[in-house]
Every structure is written in structure tokens, then in C-alpha cells.
Image (cartoon, rainbow, N blue to C red):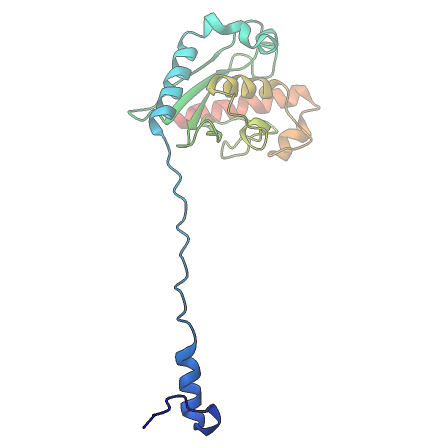
Amino acid sequence: MEVRTDVSMDNLSTDDRQHRQQSQQPAATPSKQVKPSVVTVDTNSVTQRLQKELMSLMYSDDNDYQYPYLVEMTGGDLGVSAFPEGESIFTWIGTIEGGKGTMYDGLSYKLSLRFPLDYPFKPPQVKFETSCFHPNVDQYGNICLDILQDKWSSAYDCRTILLSIQSLLGEPNIESPLNSSAAALWINQEDYGKMVRKHYMVGEAFES
């Protein structure tokens, strides 16, 4: 006797009908998880780049004409230097001499430079460690300079940064100040010069 295995769906109960419909559906394939891309940083290449920049600074007298417009502004004496602080090549201490003929003539300022691991594709963090009264420098030493922000280029180096900050001392951008008091006083050069010296002396006394 022939046994029929195909049962009409109409003769099944509601529970049996739902069970058979679920069993006939293809099994769901597990979704593929997208693994996040891992960005590797070649610290060796960054270290080599910084060592090369250090050598360039140490022998800067041979490269003075690489930045002729800045040499002209500073009277031919660049007056910038930097060296790693401690054992880390990523942390430097820089020195800037005030440009000749500016309100900062004869003053020497220390700066800290902290280079990121993806340098030179991102700029270093640069701050004044010596108290500096300037429209584009706040009370904490932070500097408002376009090449340290949105105008940064991997073609720049430590020497370019120091020379640009040195140039900024004599030619501030008073339209975008961090220190509004200094920006307002800039038009009165005599009083401005007195405040520069006052802040500098206070900072020197505090450091000593």
C-alpha cells in the first residue's frame, strides 16, 4: 500500500503549519564582521627624520640661505636652536633669540616641542616655556600660528617652525589674538615694549 507523505497545508493545525514553514526556510548565514584596519606607525623612520633635523640645526650655518627671507628679517643671525630633552628623541627644548630691531631684541625664549608618533604628517605641539607677552601667545605659552595648525605641511621641519615663531614675534597677527591685551597695546610700541620686558623679567625670576 502506498503511503503519501505530502500533507496538504490546509489539513495542518496552525502550530504545525508555522513549524513546517520555518523548517523550509534556508538557514541564515552569519554576518561577516568587518575587522577595523590597523594603522601601523614606523617609529624608526620618524626617529631618523628627527635625527636628520637635529643635524641640520647643529650645522645651520651651512644652510642659512635656505630661508633667505627669514635671514634678511633677522639681520643674518638666525638665533634659533633646539636639542632633545633627556633620552627621548620626541621631546625637544628649543631656544629663540628675539629678532634684531624688534621689541624682543636681546631676549632669549625657551620653547618645548613634542613630536607625535606620526610626525611629520602631523605638527608637533610647541609652547613657550619662557613667559612671553605677545598677541598670539596666551598665558600658558600656547601659540596661534597657522603652520602649527591647518597650514601644516610634512615639508616643514623643526628649523622652519622656530624661524616662523621668531618671525611672528616681530610681526604678530593682531587680527586673530590669543592675548587681546597685547593686541590692543601693540599700537603703542613704547608701552608694549615695557610690558614685554616686564613679563620676561617676571618669568626669568620665576624660573630661577
